[in-house]
Image 1: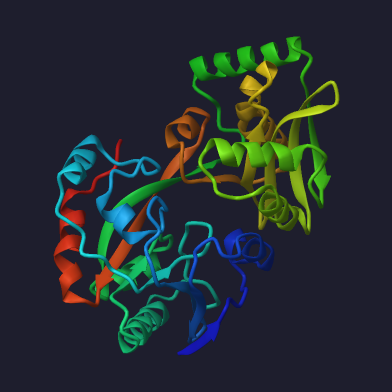
Image 2: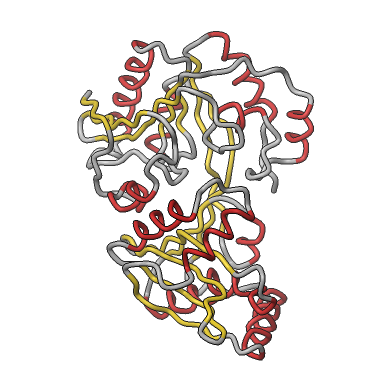
Amino acid sequence: MRVTAGFLPVEGPLFSTGRWLAAMDGRVPGLPYTFERGGAVLHGTVVERGHPGEVFDLRHILTDDTRQLPLAGATRAARSAGPAWPGCTPHLIVMLPGYECHALGPAGGDAGAVADLVAEIVAWAQARGLRAVAFLYTRGRALERALEEGGFTGIPMSYSCELVPGTPLPAHRASEARREMRRLAEAGVRFGMSDISRPVPGMVDLKWAHSRKYGGGADREACARRLEALCAGGALLFSAELDDRLLGYGLFVPHRGTWYAVSTAMAYDAAPAKHTYFATVFYEPARHAAQAGVTRLHYGHGSWRAKLARGCRAVEMPVWVLALDPELKPMIEWSARTTTLSA
């Protein structure tokens, strides 16, 4: 197995590209590694300390009543009275910094090649005294089969939402969408779609305010750097403006026939901005994507009910965990027994 520091971009989803990795630099704090064997490639990070509240933090996702995840009511109840977590650092998280785990490379779909790579990653982690290996939010049957056969415990954990352009909304949602768009038009809000390679005026301030509202720790400069990196190389901006002021936006990055929703924000101090989120993130992108022949809009984790109500489908994203320290095994097994997702 070849192990290199950092990440070797290979053909795959947006989350494996250099532009995305530059934008998300440090999103999962720790030492990043590329693992490669026989044409199969996986990306991981050695995490030295816990990060409570983050959905890559093992304790948080396995034992806490994590509001960002679509956990069933019975799971939340079990976790509120669950056993104490013994701690699990240092451990290896195998995941791209887009909250998805893909086996990449020319052999990424080959079950045998992926199984061999998984086994060598486990041996590598054991040799370094790591306490657990966790593959988070996996996609791909070859990878999941390799993990199951390799003794990992699979646990349902989240949904990723995606939309096929042209999917009709239910009648009541379509009526609601028309009403929202009509109210915005009556308020004088204008919508646009533009190709950009750097943030437009007002965009950074909206995102910074959004980050503060939802508990993000980024400062304005960090928000600016991330948006600059996301826009570099080309992005699609769906904007809502009133009197030349940016009221809200949805930013998408096209990649291999898919438009990825990568950033959104709106002006919380302006009443006409109220419905711009759904307009700039769902209604307008879906309309333009259908016209452009795009095959999929990718919306990722979080707010899954709202996304389903706008025509998306939910793809279950499990996590797979292997205890290298025997002390962790009972907790992992308890989490697997008690964790189910909300329907």
